[in-house]
Amino acid sequence: MTGWTIEALHDDHAQALRESAVLYDSRTDHQRLRVFENGLFGRVLTLDDVVQVTERDNFIYHEMLTHVPILAHGAARRVLIVGGGDGGMAREVLRHASVEHVTMVEIDAGVVEFCKQYLPAISAGAFDDPRLELVIDDGAAFMRRDGPGHDVIIVDSTDPIGPGEVLFTDTFYGHAKRRLNAGGILVTQSGVPFVQGAELAGTMRAFTALFADATCYLATVPTYAGGPMAFGWGTDGDAREASLDVLATRLAKAGIETGYYTPEVHRAAFALPGYVKRLIA
Image: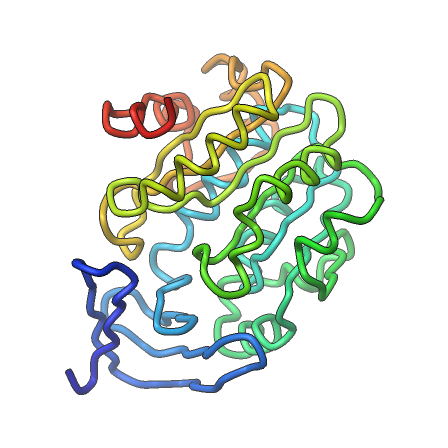
């Protein structure tokens, strides 16, 4: 359809977004990048015609992949982000004044540069924060090397095709665990279980072998079509047991206003429907 972007990530299901204006369309060494305006979602970034982020609903995804592990941990000082070239994940992590250092590893410098220009509201100045160290590198290669430990590791990957495929392997997760400090937490983008069940099942199989506490939690992001999105959770600590009162106290101390995350949503996100429970069993 002329004037529409058709995302056909799944064989039997697609979504369409109207393009009121195309602002950017170019192929890098790794993928095709496009930014267009949509009347409902504002500016939309797609990679190889798959929606990655929008101005309107990105807060849900970014808040749930950052505030859940950071507030559950309670004392996170060093955070590693793998992927996240649009800067939204760094934006939310850096809202925590208690976080002293953030390393962001992005494979494609082109993504970072054009997001700064065409989607500045997503990063909201995060790239200028002196606590952020931006590393242009392959995330899997970076994780294999020795380096400092982290209290929280966030894998903000694309779907397991193309450059993002290596970020869904057992080997990658094993290397990530090695980079966690004691009591550290690994969280991952694990797809939409209703239409990408194998993706979540594979992640949970690896996490169960690696971590004492391995599960997932959910959030509904409108442009990630097909139902609630799952986020993998792995730790050897007891952070998931943080009570509602503890989470509320930590959020108040952080002084952060959120659009989706609340302590109640945090706790409820780990209450899984039957079809998801069966996928991760």
